Image (tube, rainbow, N blue to C red; front, side, top):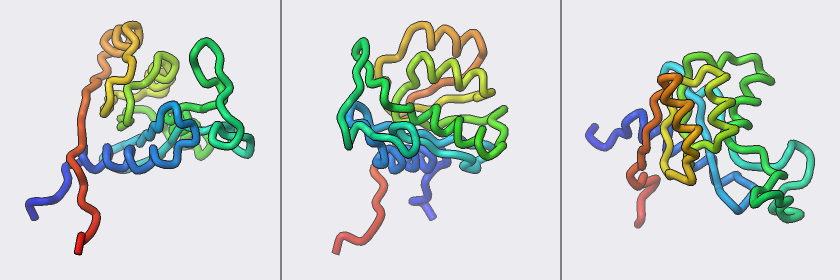
Length: 151
């Protein structure tokens, strides 16, 4: 079976699919937390649960950032916290390079590897922290995944 996706392609394709649930159109971001080649949580950009989303009421802007939105990486981490799932020694696949606050949260949560698709405004201090902690971060683009017959 030569067309089988690699693990990296598989997890990044999942992150891309999950990003389609984002409710903030400033960036459609998806994240997948992985431990031992198993997905343990996912997240996408969106408002606080049971409250308004950007797609419904618009953005809440402050200093050039939409503060209404909870980032995809944070939503994945929070899902693990709510369910009592350890994130120690896990990796994350995310469609965009994590912002500085998400990077710090990922480091605190024990993430050991970050694989991202788009180098969206990588913060120099985020990179410095990743390197000091010895966390591998790598850019990966998933090839187009054909999901069905075109006939």
